[in-house]
Amino acid sequence: MVDFALDYGVLHSARKDLHDLADEIGPTLKSSDYATLGEDSSGVAGDVFGNAELAAAFSTLYYRSKHPMEKAEDDLRKLGDTFGAVADGFFNIDAQIAEGAGVMGQNLGLDDWRGKHDAWLGHDKWVADNKLWQQYLANKGACDVDDISTLPDFCKATDPGPEPTDPGPPPTDQVIHTPDGGTVHTTLTLDDKYNVTTEKTTVTTGGGQTYTSTTAYKPDGRSYVTDTTYADNSSSHADVTINADGTGTMTVTDGDGKVSTYSRSGPGAKWDQTSGEGMDDD
Image 1 (cartoon, helix red, strand yellow):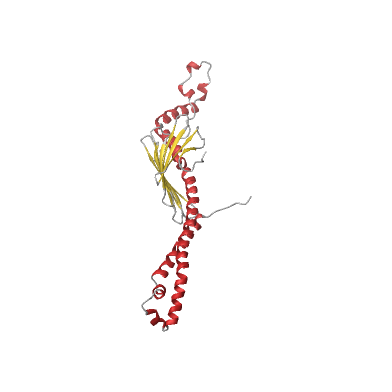
Image 2: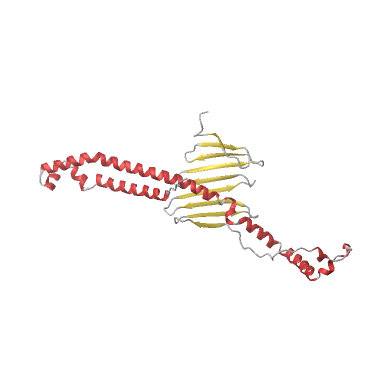
């Protein structure tokens, strides 16, 4: 199977180049000497060219080129918009994937930090357990008795493992650099128990396209609200409710105020649209 790769950065650059070309055509047509002499009705063009017939021929050339140039300007902008829409569409999909990789701080190592932090909070217990363990290692023979009721406490000791150390503050900020010179920047806000309350991810390409998603988690720890701004400055607001059994509902409102609703049948099930734009007629 042939691999297919689409460089939306190139498409994004193509949009800019086509718009820049359209911007050059506009002034040339509307406010340059070419337009001034072509539309002249005061006789100045005749003085410039020194010949009335030559001035008339130039005027004819101008009026014959005026409509194609105006159309070219408009078509260049439309073509640029088409390239840009494709670039933004694919970028938004990739950005959602990149943003999803950091959900709940998994990619920042927050869960690992919690384990180390809990171990550090139990440092005093580790000291006591390690003391008994060291006594056991030095006096194993004392534990080899028939009457277990006479066993010293250290005979019940187990290896407490390495001494826990202070892991420092929790990881709440991460920047990943992408091959195209862009970044994926994730920032977490935590409550006093180090649970994630908000997560913001901004994906930026080397060409300047930006996708930003901010998720605020509700008190139940399952449900959330996500606000997203896409590369073309469109936006969406998603309010998601996840029930204890994994079923859920989602209401999505786009930047124009159009509302669509979805539901899912259980944990990991896909979201099925239940109302809103884009549904099949049946």
